[in-house]
Each structure stands twice: as structure tokens, then as C-alpha cells.
Length: 550
Image (cartoon, rainbow, N blue to C red):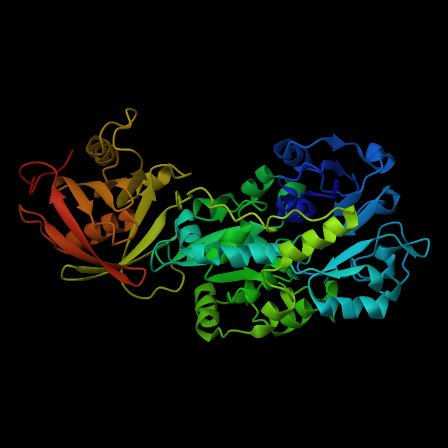
């Protein structure tokens, strides 16, 4: 059996169905790449990870096979010597696209459903065209009735894997460092020039919007992640993507692996800021609110359910405050049955339906074991790491401190403000004007000395700084305040807030006349919609009250 890869995007869908052939000694798997995609990066690494025999395309089309499976129509698939099954690598067939070099048999052909894609010399060359819903079959029968006999209704394995992963939503959120009370905003873009990462219909949309999202949204209330189409990721190169999004990444944006972790990020999301790509529609089918930054109507088959969804989904105004728009969509969200209905007509059943079709084409009886897809893996733990300076606004009411931290406060009109800077800020000049300096790491890092030693060093080096805080765990940090010396701040595992916020709250409280008694105190820090009791204790036997500091 031959796996035909057009690019990494199409390979993702092949990886979805690969487990259906596990444990069958009758089936030898081979792999090839058509070489027809402009996006060739990443294919070699993917093949190396698969560890299957890889045939050059010229050899692949000269080698008789019992079955070839492709998740794209790219390349001369009609040359394959054997039965051919084609899967969709998106959410059905939705986009208008002409086949390169094939001429145009139909006006504005829909990729995968038009004669341009399904006929060669007037004949259907596909033995099985996998569709996820009867509405696709209805469109196929209208535009290319010759191919209707090859259609197989077999659900959507990608969607089924996400359905199976829904119970693990909290696990995926923790992997991304999302704390209780935080909202996860997932940015998503398809690869077309009209997509979110292209220009979205506006030349300055992306360069201004992504940094704004990461900077304007309060750090303790929002977590921001980006899921970019594999053609973006591998077409430009991961290094280039990281370079373009450098400022946003320093403000806490995390880039999600577009092959192995994007589904988990979507399941973890509170809201998706996307465009007319498949991920937006999958998100809506999973009942996740979607706000569109680009609609791309001209790219879509107007009869496809995705086009109907795009016409009615709320739109982002890139010139209006972002936080208010996100909160408005979250508050107004109501479940819509349409996307879930049209993504798949056989939810949870694609594994059985697909394996039955594959083995019929192979001419083999199915294995006796159940047909199962691979569960979604839990991604590596990747908490936010903000090294850009944060403007911290605080409201002190006795021992209660309300706090809001963000890179910018463009609409703030109240509260007191101070500057908190990570020691690894890009601009060393930020440290000279910081009120609070922070960093994180193990307590026994020999390069830095003890957390208290590091904090004392910061106060000695930067006279403007009033407090330095070394984050030692998910809910603890060691702080050095000039008038008191080394302090331990802890909130307990149930607090679930960033210890750097505790350090800023302590600074604001002390700056507003707060005084630490010898036995320490407990502050009540309100952040991300929750109030956290934070214990402040001296690390030495007696407080350094009135001391000038290092």
C-alpha cells in the first residue's frame, strides 16, 4: 500500500488513518512524494520519523501497488499503477482552485469535486473518493456526475480524534500554561494570501494585529497561542515565522506545532480568532466561539457549509479595542448545530467506515480487531514566558490588591502604575527604569547563586528598582524588598496565578504605605477574576525594617 504525500498538510490526514493498518502483517506500507507542491519543506523529516520505505515518485508510479491513498489531488495521480483512494485533508471540499496545467473544464472549479480534478482524458481515475457528509455528494453529483459512483461516505477521522480528545481539555490547557480564570485565545490562519496570515483583505492587518493581541490583553486574564497552516509554517520556514512574530512571542504568544498539537490547542481554546480555513469550522463544530479576522468569500465554494458559516460568523474590527470584541463574542456565543452537523455525517464512526473501504479496495478481509484511531497526545508543558516589560496597574484597598498586567494599557484611566521587567528583556535599558525585576528558574542554579543572592544583586545593580523577585515554582517566589530584605511569597497550589503578579502586588502595597510586621502578613491579590491569599514571610530570623537594602 502506497501513501502519497503532496505536502506536510496532506500528510497530516494520512497520519490520521495510518493506525487502521497496524498489526496487519499482510500489508506492506510504502511512501512517496509527488514533488508537485511548492511546499516541500518538512516532508523529508516527516518520512524519516515514519521510518517507512520511501520511493521516488518516478519509481512509485512504475511500481504496481494494491492500493494508493492520497489526501490531495496534487501531482499526476492518474499514473499510479493500482487502485487509488483520495481523502480530503480539510473539512470536506470547500475551496475554489484550478488544477495546474489541466485547463478549466468548469467555471471556478471546487478543489476535489470538479471535473478538473477528477477526470483524466474524460475518465474518472479515482477508485474511492472519501466524503464526510452527503451534502458533498450532492454537490459532486451536480458538477461531476461521472465521479459519483466512486464516492464513499466515511466521516472525518480528524474530527473524530478531536471528539475523542474533548474529555482532556483541561490537560491540554495546562500543557499551554493556562491557569484557572484565564481565557485562551487561539489565533488561526489558513495559507491563502487572503487569510489571516496573508493580509486578510487589509495590507496592515497581520503586522499590527498579532503584536497588539499579545500586548493589549491582560497577562493574567488571557493566554494567546497561534496555530498556523503547515504551508505557512514550512513554506516560510519555522525560523522565519519566529522572526516575524518575535515581539509577540516576547509578549507571551506561543507557536503551536501545526502537525501534532494544533487539535489539542483548539480543544483547549476559549475563543478562536481565525479566518475561512478548516480550523475555524472545526472549532465552531466543537462549540468554540469563533471571531473571523478574514472571510475569504471569494476563495470558497458558495454552496459549501463553510461558506455559509463564514457569511454569518462575527467579524473582527482590527481598529477597535481587541479585548472588548473578544469578550463580546464570548458573552453572545450560542451553540449552533450547523457546523457539527455538516463536518461529519458519521461522528465517531470514521475508523470503521474507512477501514472497511480500504480493505475492500485491497481485496482483503478486515482484521478481527476493532478499527481504532490514535488518541491525541498530550503536548509538552509550555507555560508562558514573557520577557517583554509589563505595565502593571494596581488598586490597593488595605491588604487587598487588584492587579492588571499587560505590555500596553492603551485604554486605562484609573489605578496606579509601575513597570515590571524580566531580567532577560531584549532592551537592557528597561532594567534601569524598572520598579520590579523578575526572572524564573531552579532554586539551585549555580550560575545565579541562591534566589535571595540574585535578588540582592539586582537591587545593587539597579538603584531605581524597589523589588526583585525570583520565581521558584508555579505558586512561589523569593523577593527582595529594599526596606525589608529577602522575603518568601507563596499562595499555595489552589491559588493558580503567576507569582510575578504577587511580587508586583507586594510592591504596590508597600509603595502605598503597607508595613510588614515581624511575623509577616497575608495579602489578598485579585487577578484573572479570582482572589488569591498570598503569604509574605521573612527568609531571615528578623526583619530588616528600615534597612536601605543592598
